[in-house]
Image 1 (cartoon, helix red, strand yellow):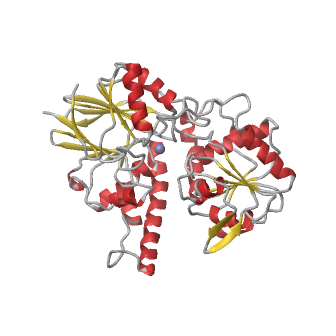
Image 2 (image 1 turned 120 degrees about the horizontal axis):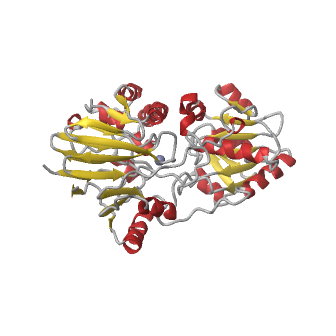
Length: 459
Ligand SMILES: [Zn+2]
């Protein structure tokens, strides 16, 4: 018997994570991520899947980000019926992420039909809400730190990665191979989550390399001071602070950071509004008492779990009112790159007023409104009209929930036994740079796999 691994995504890119592990009559797919970003990549979501989805026996999920779970309803739509193994956090967040993705798909298809720009006769969504609901019914609970037998001599073992709630590395044992999938790895000190742990090593390791070529700034005594200073200035001039943020995890990290700043007297105590339906739902999951064990021990209730200064905005009316708050406020809204969502309405109202400040908290892909604003654009087009940019714009890039190059190397060095080969996945420029470092510093073979490349694994 041989065990083979085929790279069906996140090979030379950071999206579309999918790895097919074939052993005997079993076909396991580790992650079922959507390709995102450039059109060339997005079109891959529409290609026929390389093997029949109905022939896949199991899906194993590392975490609930769209680029790891967003293809699952498509697989279901095409006939996949097996179990989807995931932690409780991953299951709860996947439900939110997939429902939102299905809505976007349906909306896109409707727009395409209206605009007549689709190449298809009747534009169809990649999947719809019904497919997403069907996918959720296939979930099976996989706990951390336990050997779980999937039959046919296959065992899986999940270890915390402190990337988002529920995120895991997965070690898979087959009758003739052992392999560790790192999943996305968090920093060594995630502000909200329980610290990551190191799985048992294996001859073959796949490691993410998003930041394989970069180091994050160290968090010092007064982290995010530039951000805090901008908030103080803005509130002093009676302006509002708008923070575009990713709905899952970034919102939680931001809330804790802001509340810590407030407790330390570094920023004034002003109301914080979360204006993102998906962000509010994700926060509920983080606040679930059953998830307390997954959070940092030193997390104080007032910092995230029981906040008196934070207001959740759900209705559209409340969202509109927020454009004219009756006292200086902080508004957290998605999407993180201001490509869509309620944050666009806020930008339209807040950018022309020089008292306001917009703070971006993550990587801004080229071409997005976020990257244009950070680039210093003085006019921005929204809903077909130009808006003057008079508000202050700031980027705080100290919020990444991905391990940096040193963090990735530390994780690899701690694996026992050490791998014989490391595949650097989930990276663009980071992948070859990390591979070189692994060869030179650890003396281990390191390869950046190609899309659809297949390799034979061993023990
Ligand atoms: Zn992720």
